[in-house]
Amino acid sequence: MDKNIIDIGKLSGKVLLFGGVYSNLQALEALIAMAESEGIPPENCICTGDIIGYCAQPEETIQTFKNWNARSIVGNVEIQLRDDEDDCGCDFREGSRCDGFSQQWYPYAKSKLSKDSLDYLETIPDHIKFTIGNQKVTVVHGSYFNVSEFIFKSTPWATKHSNFEATESNIIIAGHCGLPFIDEQNNTSWINPGVIGMPANDGKPNVWFAILDDSVKPLQVDFRKLDYNHTLTNKLMLNGLLPESYAKTIVSGLWDNMEILPETEKKLQGQPIEL
Image (cartoon, rainbow, N blue to C red; front, side, top):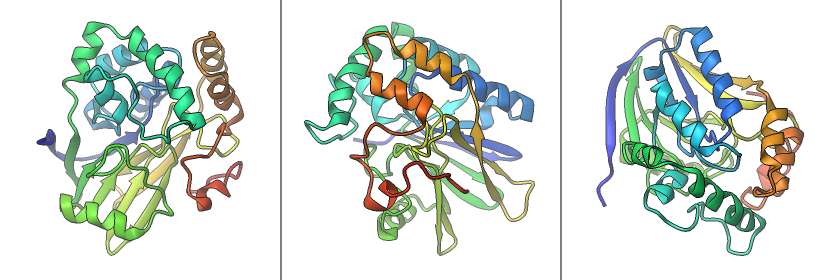
């Protein structure tokens, strides 16, 4: 199947990078307010996918994102919803806790989306390419080869390197794994800005995003934390239809389980993230 890849050309100034909104309307609204306060235009705001997910307001979140006019690529959740599939396509191990929880939140999200929102999902590309400074950038969800591939900082560099070769990029912006990090080798950078819909397993309720800024030489990536009304998000999720464990994570900042994590990342649970 041919990929839908959009090249948006050269960007300048600040570029806002984020992922995993996960139907968390309160986090999205806080991020939009931050972008406006920083003077970052919507066309310089790029999501790594999974606008829809674990939280309580999928329809409101999609419509808010659409009206913002920011950019996004498809995550596995968008692909599955767009194609009217029966599961989230997260590639969770069958019978795992994540798999069980997805059988609650995915049908809930699917039941809430309007035709207008589903039509919007059809417009979202597989990948976005752009240049900033003299760097060629490609945005992927899991990896260039597999939208559901979990790639972490501890993932061997050879796995990452094949993505740079295939895309002919200096920088890969990725999502899916839920944790912010940067890994740099051979004048290339793999950047995961984190997700705004769920905490990063660090014991804090705030969430992560990143900003690229070509006014700083050499080009720098600035990882930042986002505060938002997580108590409201938690309250809305306690509706009897969504996993209570995920509602608890919104407040505690700790993941219910670490089934998807490599051993290196498992050991970091509850520890402050320094980036």
